Image (tube, rainbow, N blue to C red; front, top):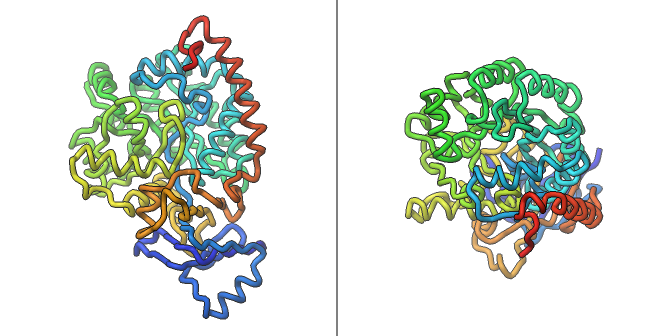
Length: 462
């Protein structure tokens, strides 16, 4: 069994005690963490351990943290970053996302997904929740899942679907959605030594019928699946469900039976007091996407209030179409700063609280808090090493502050998923990054040319 030792760095285990081990070490055997503790130059046992491990990493000047959880993204949107940076959600979907996604071919979904997985790993996320809803071919979804496997990342694919989608070519019946999800569960659940999981992802509440949502609730309950749903992202979405059903977004989710401990409420910006109380009572999780919420001017979620109420909050980058990147370390700073300025309160969301949302909160949302989200014996060896010896980071007073306010994805040195090294010396070791990017750029150029006549935005390069 392969044994690895990372030692002599600052270790933030993100345990309940809020420990800071400086210098600390993490000892890994196989795919599990065996020991976490303080490193001592005078401890003979630790030195013997260092001498016998097959892989040893001196983390001096670096910080070791649990792998971050990117709790909401759309990996296919890697092809769409920066096409347009000035549209509200409805126009952005109609003019950018739908047209380009409809001309993408199955291999494009693999390439876009693989770039997205590499990007997540290299910015500290060892776990992603990909909300995939473009089903022009069943091979689209398998392409994204192949990207999970080939990159070495861990995560869920939430099989999206909507029977009343605003783009009629993306509409599916309930029968189609649930049959396809059954197939994914049969073919992919537990793949890659358990790294791949499937969730149910009703796309949103304004694009789904009442009957569809009720059936989705029964389906998810019968199979014990996570339900991952866009909820209350804009004020217009609240108006939509009030007009159709006499219920606000979260009220509708609860009424159809789709709100519970396995529910991930994505965005949750326009929630009132009663809806927050319902989320707390139903023990659902909220996935906060601060960058896309600012990018699309959707609003500011009430995250500090949610945290005070005991609601579990995880963090997500959202897709590259509305971010435009998936830098999970950069997202930490946006999370803290957005809520400080929104409330005009500089005391909100100190660094360790932000890190908890990105680690413990993400693991809990994925129902993996028993084996992920912190560096503790018996948990999976999903960890990240970030170099703090950088001019934009050092000198360091507190490692947590340096991570939240100074570091970005370019500072990630080493990433391990289940004890397997997937990023080393800032390079994704399982993928030829240069060849991948070359192939993807050629495909994007061809798709832009195909769309340019009908959609002028794809013809302009500025």
